[in-house]
Image (cartoon, rainbow, N blue to C red):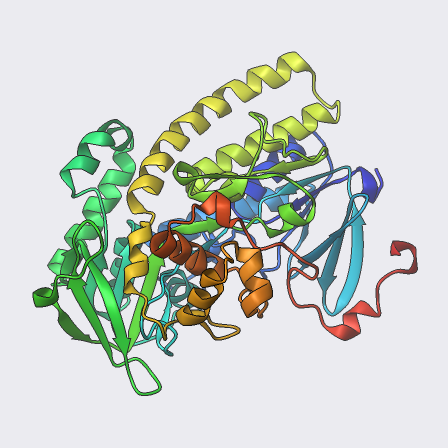
Length: 472
């Protein structure tokens, strides 16, 4: 088969790997593309460390799972292209790639978008100080390089990932001054509303219990229903101010505490990376139970644009197990749509995958409803707080634009340059969107999303000169 008859899979995380292996099973040529140097995405990134080293029990288990996926890919005929960035989409059906400072254009029979997600952050005074990072960034440095990115840590935000990473830091010899959990299942209303979803996940419950026990044994303080109020330091982080909050995110002044720390790790859930799907003209949808904006799709993982499919976090935030099931279903659907398998075989193979996806979505709905930070978090922002780091746009500048009648993200981009920087709005879209909703009551579907534009990621100018003549 020619390249045009192959299926392009963008993203070599759990979803992309599952889709590639499903296609390989049916003999469909697939090209698996990822900008990282290893397959596995953010979830299975841990297997890249030295074989004889340990990063703690949890990371060691993930490393072994990642190696198993890698070995399965090596045994297959999947064309794996690592260190390759997809930076654009051009009509009628072409992906622009860059690798080793050379540009290539790939036209495929079908495109599966499995680009994953990025961590959510929250804005508050001092959140741009050196020493403040996402929890996932700290985990990557620890798991991949075997280095602690600091000495004394505070982990703050929402969700069980805080406990997991805090445990990994402790096991690696780091000092965790506190875990600060803004919301969680410890609240009675959450326990009652989501009891069925939680009971159906014994493995995850055991994991959470193990993390809490390990942290308790290590003497790590756990603050529930608290939040970070401020990060302080002269050029770098020195102190983290935390305080209890009420249901409306009003700070209880007498509960303020100052913690000494040189590293603050933030995690407020995940947001789907939808930029490539937007560029290709695939419709988006918004639902809090899906973690916010995601790529709309049918029950076979088909996107709204013919020939495009989605899997993993871009189809709704839900974790690795759910991502693998959606990837396997997407691969199966592509094989069916290409005429490789018949309707009866497709229905038979898709049935258990759809059942797994329904179960996974129920649990993901609970996580997204409980652990996604509420709009009230905007109360932490002061007028001088930077909301767009790349362009240094402050809250007061956003306030001025809103006063002039601008209430959409793209309108704010034109008025303030918010979203025009190096990250192209990936970070500030979350921060500003939450600020608009919490401070002014602008619903997410009213605010919209930043328009995606080429290049999606930076491309060296010299590489553009290598574009093939037949690609124009």
